[in-house]
Length: 204
Image (cartoon, rainbow, N blue to C red; front, side, top):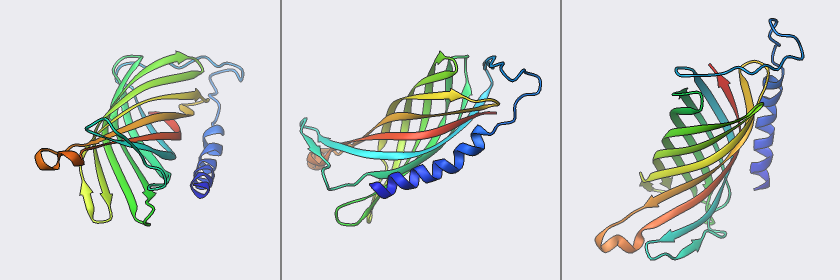
């Protein structure tokens, strides 16, 4: 876990200087922080890195099964594109990925692809997006491959920098149902994970 946290902080350290050192807009005074507004048709590109914490599995009988030491914390990252439908609503596509190691030294890999809806709360210079991602995840563990649906509700907080950048982070819940029927119904599981990530948003 400590190695994962250190790697994330190092990677994000490379991103921060470039984002913070934005050239000021020559058309604005140095102390002018007049907000830039966005509307229908504008778009943004986002990316981030973070940790994915395994919480617990649940079955179709309502039993909760903690991951415990069976699965360690995972590293994760994402890229996404969103377009403004209104000044408060964005819709887009996110591709994310994670990896974590099991107690048996096998690697769990998940690559979710989701449509993402965002509702933006404006506390300028802070933006707080309330988000919901819906899609499917490509999951691989050893020789086992699955393609379950995934639901990702979350909340973020981003600070507007000079230029077109925002910098911040988000907390996202990953809910992954692996549903089986008939004789295999008792193998149904609902995976629950928590993403904590740092990211940047660039307004195109």
